[in-house]
Image (cartoon, rainbow, N blue to C red; front, side, top):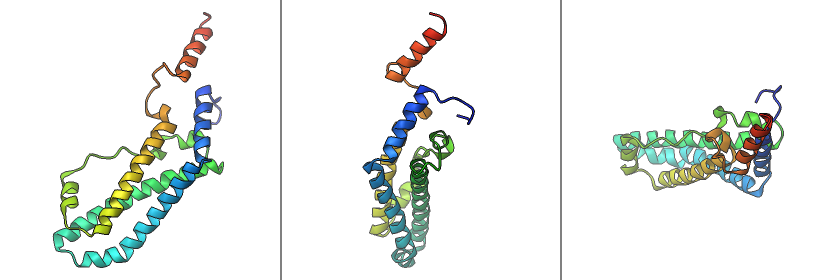
Length: 176
């Protein structure tokens, strides 16, 4: 939506849904959990993890590097999503801006063979734990993102309230 467009009823409802979420205790908890996981992972990768990687074989060290890069990328996606929604809460960003595709979480990619091999490598247990915690948080956030930005994901079925309102508006605007 551009600054000159009038908000539709659907946009107003969606904006209220996002605003309600970002002001909720659930958002506060997810925000804290996400940022804590980012910090915890960075601390691990810069300290204990770096030391552990030195003890790995060459192929395991490569797997460690690949896993840590994917882990860092996923955590930056999570942090970015959380910060965008916090900006909505603080009125630093509009719902329409936050709903743009560039701020949405990407779909998780299918595992490549190299990722499967990395999972099977003898990597430090803490790295596996951080990767699993990140995967679970990303899944939760993906579900929330799909729920609160549903109209950007897929068209509504028409059987919901917003779909019925659109049908009524179309009928009355056509002179019926």
